[in-house]
Image (tube, rainbow, N blue to C red):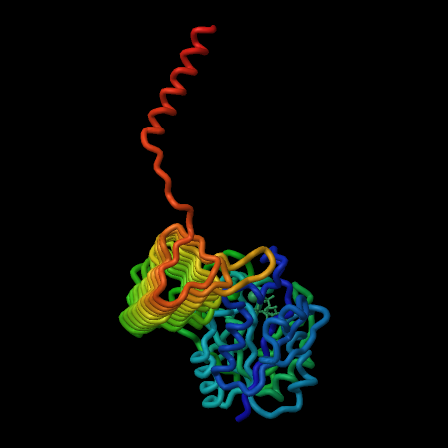
Length: 467
Ligand code: UD1
Ligand code: CA
């Protein structure tokens, strides 16, 4: 049977007190509405329609053509929001999932379970519910004597008796598509908030003698609807824990999961150890048997097997196998370290390739460079890649040795096996196996320091005798 999905994302989210529209607030680095869209995609929904209103352009810019859109110009309630998708979905046969854009923890496996129960029960509507210790703020599930769902009542419309019900509406449903749109036509706004509630569809269908089912999730975190920043932090904490658990199950050691921040799309190999303060974002991919952290930040980075990254920032850079980075290194976009490269303390590398086994151990800047294999770059040596107008390239051949505090003024090439003497400022190419020295020759003046001291002492004595 054809599966469709409707994601409600037109509200402003006043309680967030933010310039950013609610559903665009990130949880573990990914906007809430994208989490939801990916979950419905993984639950094999062929079409996903996002209802947009407040911040419509921003939401569309975020999701692009991964979804279809229906515009709700005025936010008259969740039922009214779903109705805006009628021109797109109204005539289709099949089942339709409706989910709020502010419930980022809903999982595709629960959506699958919701759909299967719906089909097994032959229901017109199936609600995903959860039992919460504190149900305040959510719609309550009112069940009849036979235990079946009768209707949903919103917090603001609850009697004292209804308010005591702990089973809540997660805001996720599965409907028979045609029955959904037929019932929506009958929803009115006669309630405390003067809104067209989607939740009224349940009572309407029930009144028509239709079958209503409920799928109760045993993971209450899925129910979290993020309406304010407190719930946002709670969603972040729960998602963080869920992501950590997935990696732990796959054989990753996380020393302190509460202080390790892993994005939803990060991949990590077996027997890798993550120390506290590690932040892995975007499409970062870490190999097996690596050691990351403490306090390492990696954005869209790739790290080969057996590498170590300590107290460093790695941004859109690739590390081969067996590399050692840090402490206190900064690898910027376009950096590619081949295998067994060592990048030490206070070293910055940008848009450069460093060959197998090469070392940049301390206090260097390497930019727009191509460094061969087994090159040693001495302490404080740098590439001067920018003259204020243009960026130029430095090429260093295999087995070259760059002495401490050398300045390589780009564009410049140092040949294979060449040797640049410490303190040199290199402005001309160095041929393979040559030694380049480019610094003032040293002159020693015998006893001159002592002479200077005597001169100074005599001057001071003259001044003191005058006064
Ligand atoms: C809704 C449910 C409530 C449920 C809770 C779960 C209704 C009437 N109530 O309440 O039973 O327990 O979710 O989190 O449905 N939206 C629109 N257009 C509108 C109004 C809302 O697109 O006109 C969107 C919002 O952007 C949001 C979602 O619908 O993503 C839910 O709206 P919200 O106002 O947060 O509903 P709740 O009061 O949380
Ligand atoms: Ca909500």
